[in-house]
Image (cartoon, rainbow, N blue to C red; front, side, top):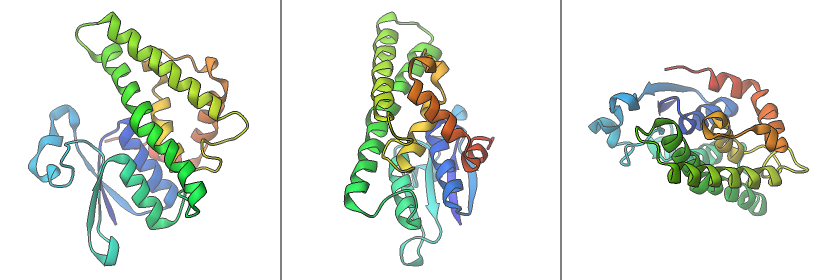
Length: 205
């Protein structure tokens, strides 16, 4: 059994998608980030950076419990644990890791700043909004180009796609028209047709 400390954000959805796709048993412990649950001492022992998601795998290495924080690290851990969606072949694994790190280092953080300044900031700062919308469009262009001629970012369906999709699903928050990125639009349609993804995205807390 895996304990998932979760809230319904793009980063939280990455892990519910992985757990559903990999067929792992899990239970959700809601961390209400709107009420600052992420700063509670019990949660900080699992996730010292006070961010969701985090997991505790009760059947970790050598049959002992292990906690993992940071969504990318969790995806890699689950991929290694199950042998699913994370290749063991070095060449294929590097391809997946490149796109996972692209999401973790750019696509997620930049789109997150886009959300903040464009949707949530009390003071609308035109320079900040323009900066992050421009960078968001550049990143969508990178993704669109990568998807030409292939269904998934690293060739085969992988944990990299599980990381990317939840952020694309907030495209309306990002001032993005998916019609401008036809390969991304097809990618979203392809992924959201998967039953495991539909189930993961339906989870409400």
